[in-house]
Image (cartoon, rainbow, N blue to C red; front, side, top):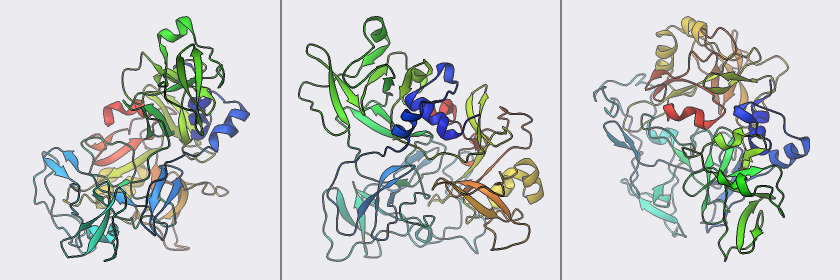
Length: 456
């Protein structure tokens, strides 16, 4: 079985029928795997810059290279959390009780590990503005209740994450969409993608996917070139060319194909673009299930470890370990007003231990064992790293600590298999936990976002 990256590439350049994976041509592999997303240059205050992250595309960073995040307002079951435009809500107060945002749990329940619980600003340092700082474009300055000033972008106050350890890291949050049962996540911010009007770019498992501004996928056909289309007549009943307006002009990675007199089609990186008439939902990959058709990505996600495999299940393809056992990620956000995440080894382990083994570390290791790295394996990119974990506590182990495990992590969070999965393709642990794993639980790593409709 192929790695995750090979799976993603099959959707980019050489999609296979009925979501089965096949190998892309080497030349196409080289052309697409190294491409990075282009972005629009926007005015920035002094000290800020743009870094292209492997997972999230171009992101804004401060002078130290730390990614900038916002905390947008998010509707939950019993109200909203996050920040209203122009109104910081993250302060140095240590919260002690739940907020009651997630029915049926009431507010006022004591939070765990209060002696070590951090405040919001300990995890999310505000991006302060100097007294003489001035607004630039969408960059504005908002007051905090202690009298200090904070930078905001598009009216959302900005923060960095203590989880980011080196310039360009985006370990504190993601731009991937999330469901109403999820916490109010922090979201990395960046400049607009350099795309014509009528298009959008979204973050998915496989990479940064190109869509229309209505969020419907666009596709490419491997028999097309920048100068000619092989899709005419009957083909266009379901494959609708994406028409470029009369005033549109070629620029950079974008060009225009005149299909017939007066009918102009958008072309991206040498491939004419289409939508799929049978797509039932946004961000679909269904149109790439036909041989020769592929979704289009502005950049691919980083490859998973070489020892990992892809397994076909009744619900779609999942990422699996070398034995074919499905790999799961742990998701956790507490029900406090500051919506702190609890999925990282540096966070409280009370929630995870309760979910995986009723509070017993031994049971957790039995039912949700870590995916251990081989002796000769090394971390391959910013998404997949090998970390040393103390299995008794779930926290990072000290150097040379006896009994520590070298395990694979995704975005700095360890990954697991499920003890009750018996054979390759089993996904018996998918959606374990509160609200199908969105609030506190475990999720399989599906290799297509449209497999996850029921969990978003």
